[in-house]
Length: 193
Image (cartoon, rainbow, N blue to C red; front, side, top):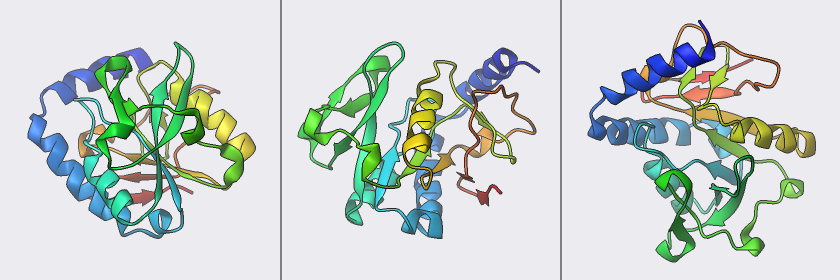
């Protein structure tokens, strides 16, 4: 199966899931992840802001804020570039950006600095397999970001936070794809490697 075929299948599959299930699974997955050593070992966390057909990350954001973690979220800056900026629970640090997704206001002084130490990246994706392969939406934002992050800070980790329905038998990959270090759903936490 090609990536394009799997993307089409996954998008159709996710459209059949009721909206409240994305929120409910998000709450359960956030609690599961927050109880892991992986989560506890990072002070800086980069958390994606969910689109309507992705697991809702608001519960994980709330946990991170409550625990005093330094939280960063993505801001799309061009067709090829995405950067992360520090966010707080304060609504004034947010705006609505590309793809109608809430994103950080993006003040330069709040930009994520890869040279300040390791971070845990909470990754979105349409599909994941148990070997850690990830399939995104095809724009390459996260793949380009991971390449820079791991060159600067190899101690960082990537954890997929996703719907149970996003786990598939096999995700097609190419040389640019980076595996995730862990996958967390409402039902399970899977460490890769």
